[in-house]
Length: 396
Image 1 (cartoon, rainbow, N blue to C red):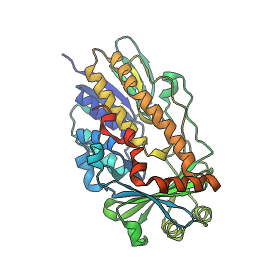
Image 2: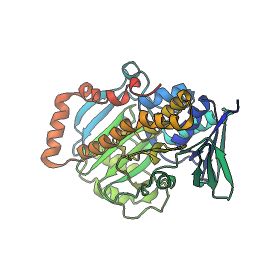
Image 3: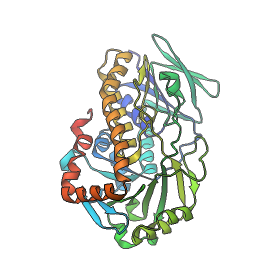
Image 4: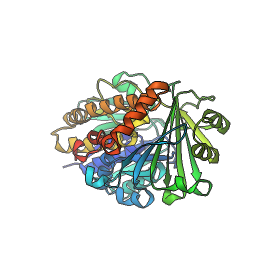
């Protein structure tokens, strides 16, 4: 029997993960990536247990683990004076949720995924070739490539990111546009420029009016990943399709002038900043049509306040492979994939949005939040994420 062929548009975290899952479901997989090469862009990301359990099953976790950090805790602080509001313990993450909680550089995760793809004979990766259109029949789907070529397969997975061009073609949803409301600033700070207490193996969250900051060490403690999210638009608009744009350090130093000294010193130590506006969209009514389906940010772009962008794309990939393994035909398999995933991804989108409002409170509302966090304690606060992190909540 001839092996079925899957086509994937996009070689990001979602596309690469989907390729591995589909190969395990006995598909021949072709990935088409518009970038001429897979550049190691990005900064740190949090891989919660709902994602790491899938990476372990795919053989990716073992490739990544040497470059990743297992944090002892998440330490939540008040911005103006650094007062510790809560400590959420993570040392027993694997016992509690069934898989580790990891901090990693996005490029290290990409490298591990690419290595796994390269070792999988059923997957072929082609760069420098964007998928520009598709047409589906009862028996197959054909994609048009920007170089004028075409390819045919049994299904197409649109994993072409937050600004997906194929999403509009599939479900009639307009392309996501950047929000003028919130902007993320990212930097990697050399460890030699950081105070020793900020190099501890913890994830740190600072909450302030209209902004929050996250930082944690990466790559064996050689650098600190630093992220600031502001309720303000960037002074310079990023280019269309650009992953990020240089940011003005003087702007950030002014913006955080009233925050605690240790954090101001960390911000001042950053050698350069990259900025981009955050994007989200309301949950889509459907992700699939016939032999074509959306995956990852193309299906559910979300704000980063639950740190679930990469994790939800990895969950999508796992569900896709499971659904197609069990289905009698491709179209039913894609419907099953959407059924398995859409309600959960919608919930993560909504709660990510709500979390941003909580993080950025000011005045009496912020005081009430801080008092509530202190009264609840770290373990109680952590229990609120059991629905998200627990391995049993994702398809395995």
